[in-house]
Image 1 (cartoon, rainbow, N blue to C red):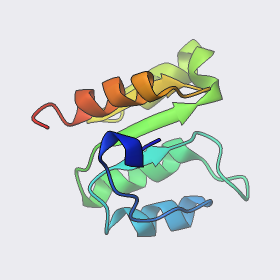
Image 2 (cartoon, rainbow, N blue to C red):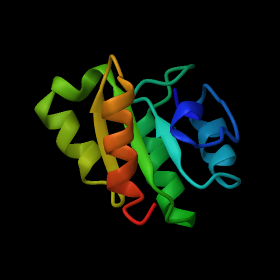
Image 3 (tube, rainbow, N blue to C red):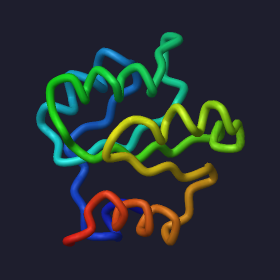
Length: 101
């Protein structure tokens, strides 16, 4: 789906540590809230923000939890879309974090 929108995939990871490390070589991050090994996408996003300001799009089934959704939206330069992700929702979220594209 991301390829159909004209973007490249630079890495695919499953854990919090791998997400933080992998983000160093990417222009943006698509992040789930729940990561493998009990990791948190929210924690990973905050760690990524400590070293760089790249767009993060949370794609999560947890978007309906208002408290959690507010915490994800509080991370600067992010967008949030609920699963299941459609191409239209993904395109809108990417346009939100990449307004000039």
